[in-house]
Amino acid sequence: MAGEPAATQGLRHAPATIVLHWLSAVLVASLWTIGKTIDFAPNGPLRIDYRSLHMLLGVTLGIVLVIRLAWRTIRGGMLPALDHGLLLFIARATHWLLYALMLVTVGLGVLNVWVRGDWIFNLVHVAQLVPGDRAFVRQIGDWHALVADAVLVVAGLHSAAALFHHFVLHDLTLRRMLPWSSR
Image (cartoon, rainbow, N blue to C red; front, side):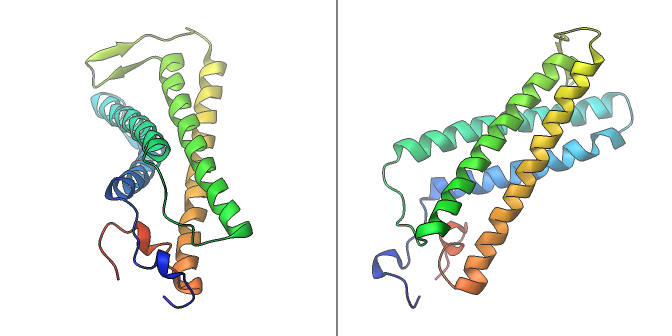
């Protein structure tokens, strides 16, 4: 690419970084969609299984995030930044904000299950932490939904920034993270 340092041309993120990034994206989109549509499932086994799938994917996202943060910390060295100054600061701040929001969402999801009490695939019963406190249950559920919405908004801005880099700035930001090889 014209205008880019030769040292950054053709560099791609490590395959593990790419897989963890896109796995996180798919999990976030799936979890948000399930979370917004659970109430449409009829009461009974189908709703329990649908909610259980949401919980299972939420735990999976939590595990992926822990692996992703550990990988980012221990892998040693990142690709050279394509941005500088304010754009670099915004990019880094956005990534850390996404990590924090996803972790808080997963934590609130786990807390939501405990305060509400639930069945997981009609096999395991999670006892209600504070029986009879419907206001607390509603509050935790509302916080979980609010932070999940914030994740989606910030992820949308993150995606828009990647597209801006690709189509307006014509740099390698997006191509370095694509799961397929791109020249």
